[in-house]
Length: 229
Image 1 (tube, helix red, strand yellow):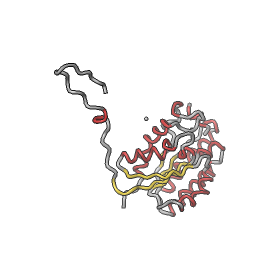
Image 2: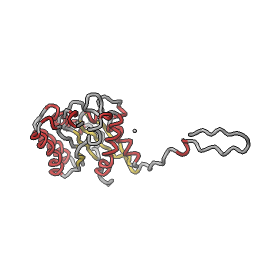
Image 3: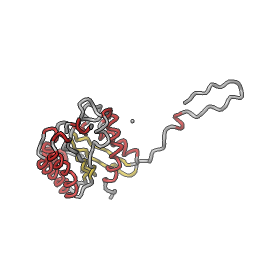
Image 4: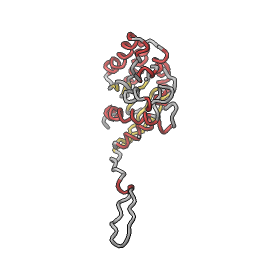
């Protein structure tokens, strides 16, 4: 149901009395903070290349997907550093147009590029064939530069018609297979049907929604990172 709205679519105090009072319970700070794995190896540079879903439209900068993903990966012991190259409003064509500039201006080649584009193609009713061609050109450029990629898939809402939905939904699996890159089938899978996790624009996730998406996809990102060396 929510997909139709896409328009496309985380001490108890004890009073001691007398000399026989029990020992005070440990404070939360001593027991509630779990051990986290130590950061392993050199920094792993990840480029988050996408649209407003990466840019964090309607959210504080620290609540964007790349910012929250970096925290999640570091909690796993991965010394991740993520550059947010999300631009609100970008179609797949606009992303392709700025790809070379973006890559050339990285301080060093990224270890992994997250590609998240296509949602604005849906909103504008752009032909799935054009989306397919643009995403293919993006992955071809990354392949030419020997940059590993993870493709974040999108799915069309039924209100665009069954034929458009079928063609668009086929784009991401086909492109991922063609270029041999891993795929997250539907980037918004964990939030699209949960109104309380979507902002009032019915498109972008809330800060809590971003946390849900990170929880659902951080494992895919960690797995897509090439082994060091």
